[in-house]
Length: 384
Ligand code: PLP
Image 1: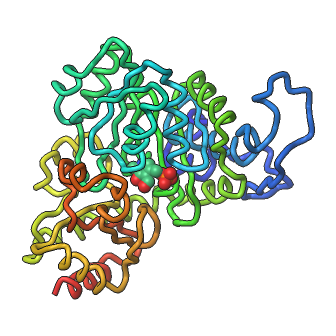
Image 2 (image 1 turned 90 degrees about the horizontal axis):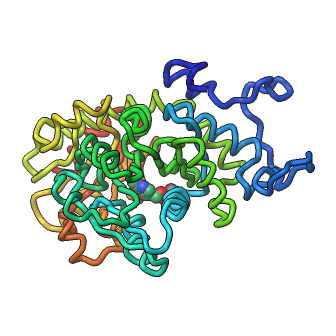
Image 3 (image 1 turned 120 degrees about the vertical axis):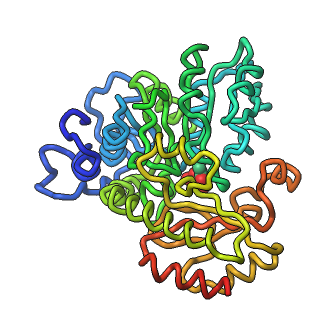
């Protein structure tokens, strides 16, 4: 696929779409059939059945994902967490050890700390900015290293090039959750990562109307992950796959607009007297701005900030905005506001959150595609 279409904008529209077009339909139809007639398939995993991730909508959007990521193969799963958990359980067996970035999405962090030990898997958390922290925690049974492209909600940017180098030197599988950047802003496979994961719930679908996940990488690894997914059952429904395929078509348009709008909002917030701190990699004040500028084509649609004052000030600000919706999640067309302490990181203890630098009054904003000046006006009146 990636050979046929050169640029991401074209791949988003055309890659993975059936040829010849089904009944001439210009949009991939929904194949809402749990099973398909037997056609002599030799292996269980090749039978056409929705749980086996082999039906037309799943296959089409998986091929589009592979093309976007410049990967050999791609697949879709029922959620970002289904993609993450299935990938890790494919790569790791009892007795294996994982190095994982300390400030991960709360659900992933929970999986590693609460569920992994029961499967005989161990994890050490690393500072993705400091290579001595990986080097000292490497063990003979370490199999993989897991990072996020930008952390949620502090928008830290780790030494991704260093992670790739380290993984190669030590024969580890390097895995990155690229949800916050999307393939429009960063292409991890080109940067040398072995596997790239997404919560497709966010920017990839972009319309806040499904949950989904994606994985892309080498064909043989993706096939192993698909077989595990077939057993664990976290398969994407055809209707969700149809919506994801539709949402993807506008990803480049949305993402670039969100990059621009978020930078303007971050600059506005940074200049406001009521704001104590803004976390956004596009700001020159961001401690890793130079690195982010080198790695990314844009800095994404999510920022976080702290007001001068307490949790009450944060709550008051949020309730005085009129355009943003106070809701968890991110990456959709609507601007969303949340306090991570009560949503994405509620699964962590307060002590764990404090260690990660996620204060109770931190506000995260996922910037949608509304007019930037209207958003800024609304933020300004709520700050006043
Ligand atoms: N990865 C990141 C960075 C996320 O923000 C999320 C969800 O918020 C996930 C993974 C999990 O995705 P899902 O909710 O689709 O399971």
